[in-house]
Amino acid sequence: MNLTTSWMQSEWTMALGWTFVHSLWQIALIGLLLFITLRLIPGRSAHMRYTISTFALWMIVVSALATFMVMLPDTRAMKEITGKLVLVSTYEPLSLTARISAWLEVRIPMMLTIWSAGVTILMIRLAFSLGWVRHMRNTASPEDEMQLVLNQIVQRLKLKINPGAAGSALVSSPLTIGHLKPLILFPVGIINQLSPKDVEAILTHELAHIVRRDYLSNLVQSFIETLFYYHPITWWISGVVRTERENRADDLAVSWCGDHLAYAKALMTVQEMQVTQGPSLAIGFASRKGPCWPESNVS
Image 1 (cartoon, helix red, strand yellow):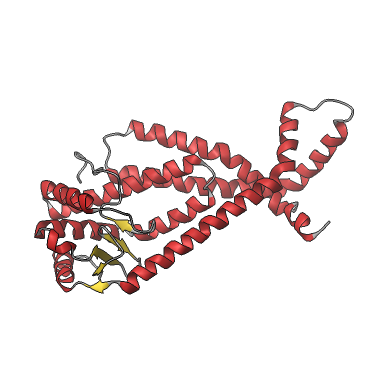
Image 2 (spheres, rainbow, N blue to C red):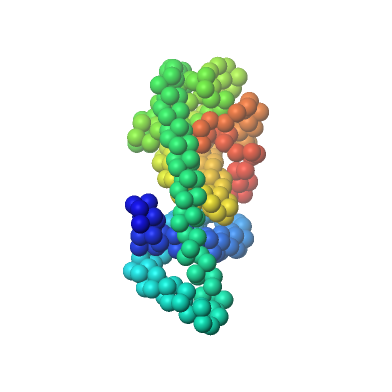
């Protein structure tokens, strides 16, 4: 038995394979529970919906880890049972459950190979996104006027953060990058197309993302998407999280600026200017397909 075959049939690998198999129904169940829960709380705040959907996303990780820990000590016993089933099957028919288990056991190496290839591709994509974010930061030019307005808002709200503001030719709408040193990027020249109230609303929204540490949350979320990319429910749950993250930032920004209509106008103005999106890791003011901030859930 060569090294590759030995590794693919090791106890750790087989436990990982069975974790993959069980995750198919576990993720589906988590998605169903989230769907029902969100339908039961339509009038709740965006913060609660975000918390619940984020909890569902983390439950995918927790259930997978728990399954792996349970399956690991049982893998050797399962191998012995599978071997006995093969011998017994020559004399008497196997049950449906035993046939399915044996069929999956044989195909686990193939499933893990496909999963590993997908994870590798998405990891490369994620690394490219991180590199592009760094390139955006390095090529951005300081916006003194925007920085002055931003500092005034931070002081007025008494926030313990020190974000920067800069212009970039690589973005088409305002967005925030970075966690330890957050930077709000604006398209070059956009300040000349916006009113002072629009600028304040946009900066307030981005500050809400920074205060909530949404860039870091989005980065962790991207890793979870990468590991569980094979299940469509993962992407649905992740989409709910991103939508409610924006809604939550909208709620906080409106509570800060206090002008409901001006905020809505600023959102529509930026969306009309938007042509393309930034990297998936960036947190943007208009990073959605339509105005989705809640009309009656402002906190």
